[in-house]
Length: 321
Image (cartoon, rainbow, N blue to C red; front, side):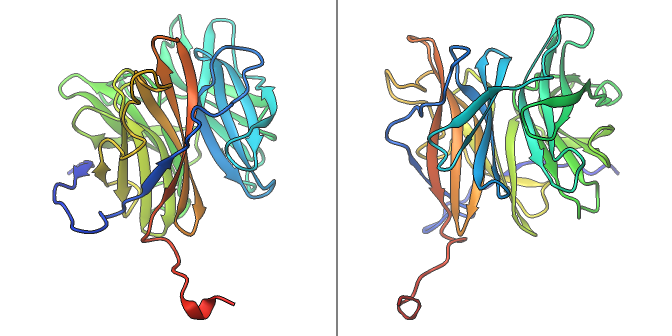
């Protein structure tokens, strides 16, 4: 029997800390000043921490599925070395919104999985490219995800995640992607791969609504955290947790303090979505997310700090010198 993978919702209330709760503090001066030297938008971020250069690295758009841009930062707020990515776009295909993996054991240490929009045969699809510096991309190609063989179509890869877990007994690469099933409607599907290029549909990740999962982090051997959103025009960010990286519990919907729409006039009043999260260690997280205000027409990026008490190290008196 095929294994059914379902995101279950935790319905019980707890008197103290909710299982896996991260307390988020929104940055007071949002949106942050992400540079826009070539366009009018700064949104759809993908952010990683690179220990080899001691900086956060961000990929974001200055246009709509266009002008994919690289930047780096030491604090997650102020971004420098801003450069347009190369080797990304084609004449009839817009390519952007990557999910980037970094591993120095690979010949190209940066691997990215992109949202491609083709006015022709490919339509909306997922692409692969790799890079030695995160800026110049090579071997750009569409992925065959065999969604048709599973009886589905790609809903839209506006938000997707590729998670690398080399010790997994299933496969080292997992792609979480929102798809449309004729019987169930929009669902989140899981695809697996042994090499990151050749994929097979594995099973459903969600059976209701369907989520764009935009970040999955492995905190420890049995602690996986994920964030995502429903649709770009429904302000709301969800938070999930898992013990195996496949079966997740829905912890918060929306995420307190940062997951809902902003107040009237705010930068994220009408859209608040596409979160990117990095774990800094010792219980501390950082989140970047997209937002839009319909009145100004601006697409911007906001920032928040998070802390999970269950991961933090308590400081006792005898530890203070």
